[in-house]
Amino acid sequence: MSSKAARAIILTLTGCMLNNIFLEYIIQLDPGSGHLITLCQFLFIALHGFIFTSKCGTVRPKIPLVDYMKLVIFFFTTSVVNNWAFAFNIPVPLHMIFRAGSLIANMVMGIIVLKKKYTFEKYFSVFCITAGIIICTLYSSKPQKAACTDCDPHAQIKVDENVDYEHFFWWVIGIILLTGALLLSAAMGIFQEQLYKKHGKQNQEALYYTHLYPIPGFLMYSGSIIEHARIASNSESMNVPILNMDLPILWIFLFLNVITQFMCISNVYVLTAECASLTVTLVITLRKFFSLVFSIIYFQNPFTAAHWFGTALVFLGTLMFSETHKRIFEALSSKPSKKLQDKKSK
Image 1 (cartoon, rainbow, N blue to C red):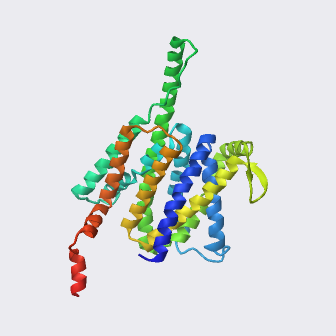
Image 2: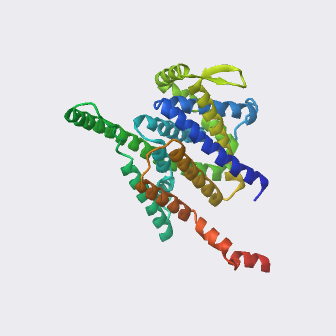
Image 3: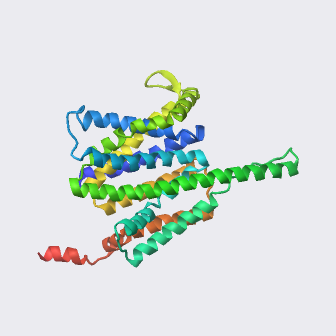
C-alpha cells in the first residue's frame, strides 16, 4: 500500500468520524437544519474546487455538461433528502445504520438496470444486511416516554398516545425519505460508473462540479435555510480562543462539520483512485461502525441488545459482500494463495 493510500485511509476515518460528531451536536440543537448544513457543505467544496481544480475557471471540464447535470440531479436530491430526514424523528444511529444498506440498493439496481447475476454468498450477505436494518428500524420506531410523577395518570396515557401516534407518523415519513435516497444513491453509483468508463476517472473534477452545479437548487429551500441560519445566529455563544471572540455555537459546529465533511469526502475520492474497491468498502464500513459506536457511547443514544444484534448483521453482511473475510483467511493461512504462487513461479 502506498503512503498516499495509507494517509487517505487515516484521514477518511478521522474526517468522517469527526463529521458525525459535529453533525450530532448540530442535530441536538436544531434538528431541522438539514438544508442549511447541506448548503454550507456544497458552498465550501465548490469554492475549494473553483480555486484548486478549475484554477479559477481556466481549466475546462473533461466530462460534458449534459452528463454532469444528470449526475448533479442524483447527487443533489440524495444529499438534501438524507440531511432532511433528521427533521422527521430519525436518530443519528438509525440514520447511519440505514445508509449502511447501500449494498442492498446497489444489488437491486444492478439486477434491474444492468441485468447482473450474483453468487449465493452475495445474496446471503444482502439478506444479513436487510435483516439487520429491519431489526434496528423496528426497535428505533418508538420514542422514549418521559416519566410523569405529578399528573393525572389517565390524562397522561391519552397525551402519550397522541404523542406516540404523531411521532410514529413523521418517523414513517423519514424512513420513506431515507429509502428513496438509498435507491437514488445506488442509481447514481451505476450512472457514475458508466460515466467514468466513457470519459475516464475524473474524481476531483466530479467532486467539484457535483457540488457547484446544484447550488442554485437551494433557492427552493431558501425559507428553511434563512430560518435556521437565524436560529444558528441566535444560539448560545462560545468563546473561540484563536479569534479571541465569542461566536454562536451552532455556527462553530457548522463550520467544523463542513471542514470535516470535506476532509472525509475528498479522501474517499483519493481512495477510489489509489486502492481497490475492496479496500474502499472496508474503510467506509469501519468508518460507519466506529462512528456508530462513538455516537452511542458519547451521546448516550438509546441502544438495546436488539440494536446491537441488528448492527452486527449489517456490518457482517457488508464484510461478506466485499469478501474481506476471504482476504483475512488468506493472510492468516500459512499457504500462499494460488495467484501468489503463480506470480512467484513466473
